[in-house]
Length: 83
Image 1 (cartoon, one colour):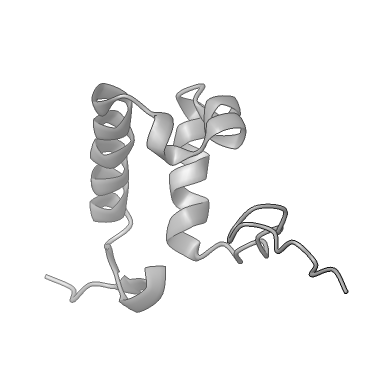
Image 2 (spheres, rainbow, N blue to C red):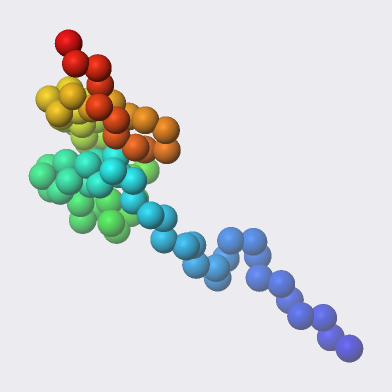
């Protein structure tokens, strides 16, 4: 009786596509404006340089302030207190 070889953990399995949060959608929109969407789709966020990542984060921060939003739990966007 032969034993079946197990596939190494994580190999051959497809990840379930993660549902995008409002924060993820906003980050992707900014990345697209900067011409980085194709790089992210191909290689993932981890492949961005520090400068590219900082640029996305800086614009994201500015846009959240303009829209008077804050990052809530699990990537939700919540209105900030009016001043």
